[in-house]
Length: 327
Image (spheres, helix red, strand yellow):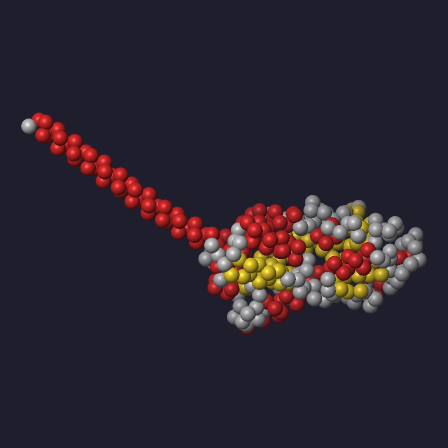
């Protein structure tokens, strides 16, 4: 009798162990399924992301797109163009079929924001980095290493009447100043005209170009040239152009990743750069929102790699959280 009782207890114990094992296996499978679903939703996106706009922001965004397609979503095609800030907004603010992002080296204008509202397009401004408006001369120019803020303004200001280098400083050569810069399609031109020249007329002789590479080439071939554009283009072409230090009143300052900040030594010529997100597109196309989040998470690293000063980490994290909330 005792033997039968012992066997019964043993069989009950074995049965309970088997059931427990099955239960654990079932839970494991459920957990695996949930994890698999989460991974699948995080991994496999496809489709396109279309970006246009600022030529200044182009190196930053093209590097970001390259990293994203290589390391994050190989089935998503990110297309980056550089029509210029203003021209880019015209492609962005389209009722149907506009771009997903517009890169900008200035903030959106009131009339552009009104157009977006009229079209029913929700726009989100994303500040991605800081840029320093940089002045360059030909490497053979042996008389200019630094200029004061006012001298730079006078060189490009029509009313100042500085025709020759000797008009800027008496010990400069009596040679004609050749001024170059980006054309009106670019936010860099608008920033310079609005913030530096305070909307006064540029010299009539200024040679304004659409492509920054053209400006670099023109300055490299003209000993009397001086041009302005973003720091990234200048620092990546120091074999063809010479960067001019600027004296804002406390000694000459060279633009670099340490001095370019809104309250730093190069502050008067520092400006934020942006990309603008079409929120409607982000809600319809998961790859667009995913790319926006990836951009803000990686903005600091890519900024440093492409000639921009990074934004504070807490500012970038706030943008990430706001984008995550759109999911």
